[in-house]
Amino acid sequence: MPAITTVHESLPYIDPEPTPAERAAAESLITHERSLVPDDPHHALLPPPLSPTFSPLIQSELDRIAAKQPLKAIDLTRYEAPDAPSPSASKDELSSVLQKAYASATYLGARRAHLALLDSYGKNAWLVGNYQLEQELKSLETELGETKKEIDLLAVRRRRQQEEVEGEIKGLEEGWKRGVGRVLETEVAVEGLRAQVLEVRRKLA
Image 1 (cartoon, rainbow, N blue to C red):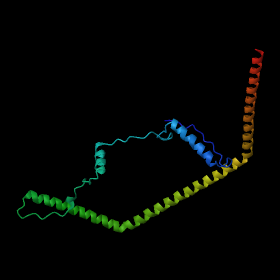
Image 2 (image 1 turned 120 degrees about the horizontal axis):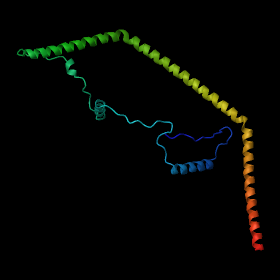
Image 3 (image 1 turned 60 degrees about the vertical axis):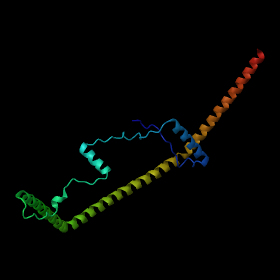
Image 4 (image 1 turned 135 degrees about the vertical axis):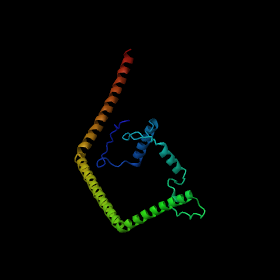
């Protein structure tokens, strides 16, 4: 995984805002550099993407969802009221109808008990759940407010630090410009002296 080694220098409280021409020139340089080096599709700090693997059962369920087919995991006909058997039904048919009737009665009894519990305790459970969510929301809002406050304090401290060294930075920048100018003047003088030396040598030859 590549490592990030680029350091972005930013002095927003000292450096002036770039002009449209300067911004266009910078964007042109960025575009040119990006054309030479292909973009990394993955950020250097992120792990490589994972290729999920599923069991055959999960994969078949995902295929069913992708095909938008209905779920047929539970046979709901067992909970429906069975039809009355005919008078001439055999013993096995009567036994099957009786088993279905027992299953339906058990399901309806459990459903009635669940509805009774929901009627007795559902409201309070819902209110308690809402209260817990409200407390969690307040906690997150408090944390967000503290984080924003820290960001504001950091911005103020950063501005103060930059303003304290603004004079020194500008002095160093002016000194650097003068030094570069002197180097250029020296190179021009050296080239002029070299030309004079060559001219004298040609005359003496």
